[in-house]
Length: 159
Image (cartoon, rainbow, N blue to C red; front, side):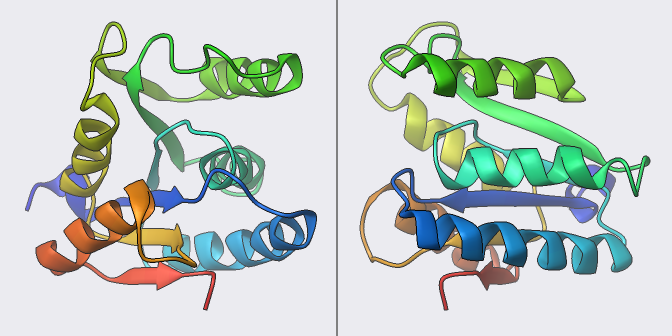
C-alpha cells in the first residue's frame, strides 16, 4: 500500500436522496470525516456524482476551514459528467471542481464503463471507504464490494 493510499479515504453513495436522508447524511458526514482526520486521514476522494458524492465533497471543503491540511481529490469518470444536470447542480459541481485540491479524469469523454472505472480507481487509491448504501445494486454496491474485497474498512452511514 502506498503512502497516499494510507492517508486517503474515498466516498461512494446513491445519487438520488430524500430531504430527510440528506439531513442525516450531512450530520453524519461531519462526524465520520472528523473521526477519520483524527485517525490520520488527510486526503478524501470523491467521484463527483450528484447526491452523496456532492454532499461528501462539500463536507470536506467545509471541514478544510477547521483542518486546513486536509485535501479533496476528485476522481471523475469523464470531463462531461455533468451533461444533463440542472443549472443548480452544475453550479455546485463547478464550485467543487474549482475548490478541489486535485482533479483526475478517467477518460476525456463519456465511454461505456467509465463510471465503473472511476469506482475502481476510488477504491484503489484508498485505505478507507465512507458510503451511503441502502440497497444492494448499482455503482455504490459495486464500489463497496470492491472496498470489502480489498479489505479496507467501510463506514456505511445508511445503517
